[in-house]
Image 1 (cartoon, rainbow, N blue to C red):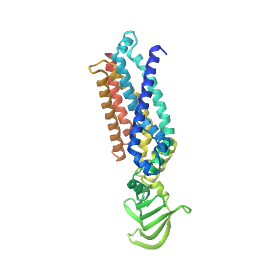
Image 2 (image 1 turned 180 degrees about the vertical axis):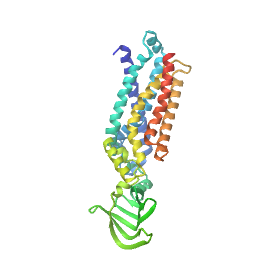
Image 3 (image 1 turned 90 degrees about the vertical axis):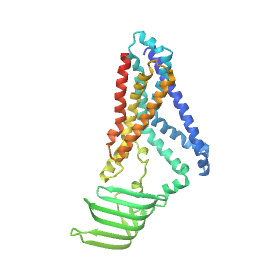
Image 4 (image 1 turned 135 degrees about the vertical axis):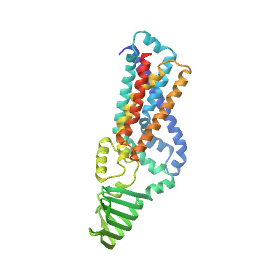
Length: 364
């Protein structure tokens, strides 16, 4: 490795680590100051939060915004090299712009590989710890009541079976207004209504109370039945069909892949959201490489405004990238585009822009 390579790698990693430490520290301080009252009211303390929540929360926020942090890092330290005419000196010494790019790519690949390991293995474990503290201490009284006591269920448990529950208590395993429907194509074949139920863990069944059952025969006649109580079995537990928005982020990649296949077999309507999480674990680290080269292309040429204008352009593009990524994810969850396209479209779009800008910069 040449001296210039070591110099760039040292500057890249040093600036990145410094920026991540500063930004994550500020983020923790701001977040803690906003939530301190709720933490104390829940019976916890700032010290407990700093040891049992924020270390895991920091892993989540750093990994989530890693590509953007790398992008701003490269913009900053490369602009500094440009303003001090160090890049001009390197290129004037006979080193091509392509060769000058290599140490940037090496560091980007290292950071992307690290993010891949963290995102697929370490982060799911950290999210379990983070969510456990968050649901216990950081939810408002209304949100806590909603999360634990008044969960509404509307779930597809198989390609032709649906379950609806008006209110479910995940702590006591009790629910009100239970509805089960089974279809043959678009025709209703069976419907079960119950005033309330409890989850019978021993029998793995829903213990229904005040049960009305309607079955529709082939000749369209109906068979009605009433039972004071009935054990009703389904292939899923109440906790498995709860609309838990963060279930995917607590599984490692192997567990998540199996979970998605299981949800597909049941015809779950939330599969796209889970597939977005899975695809993002690959596409997000890869975007680190793209944004590194894009940042280098933007900041390696001297322009009026210096570092300030480069940072302004970089932050603007970073927000565009985040907005684009969030928009495609929402479209995917709504079923407008496939999860694969939603996860990779921002990278493809910014990749094309990066190639164009990099070629123009290399030729200038």
